[in-house]
Length: 165
Image 1 (cartoon, rainbow, N blue to C red):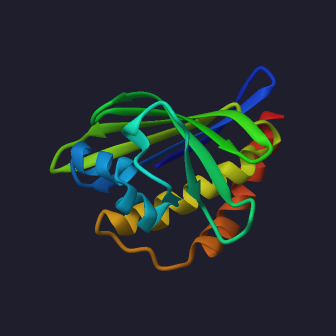
Image 2: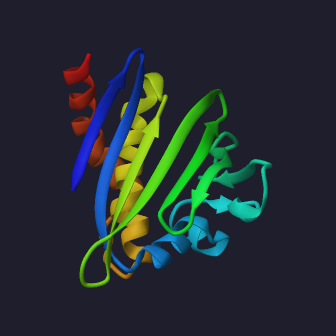
């Protein structure tokens, strides 16, 4: 497990790494198949890999809890790079790298860049999704709700932000 908040000039980015049971091909499906995405991350309006147009993904029940996702690059089953735009927060980029490990395991590396002042929330949010929804989607256990995991993760991400200034 590796979590970092990084500064690149004025921009902030988050970096997280987690290991999962499953091959890169299986984890690729978790990140790209609409039915699997809906079980652990958000409900996409269609397939992410279907074209150049953005796909809206509903992330919660609120009117503003959706994200426009557009594929910038896809190297199946290794790397997925997405434009990730929440309402009022455009220009962020999400890169997911799937690294094969031994014994049918895969390391998922998430880099979300160009986040600005919302980096602590993104860091805690990705941590909650990776440790809960994706862990459960790959056959593991997630004992608490997303909101609880997010609330528990947020102070550490705030500390990381204070450390990088």
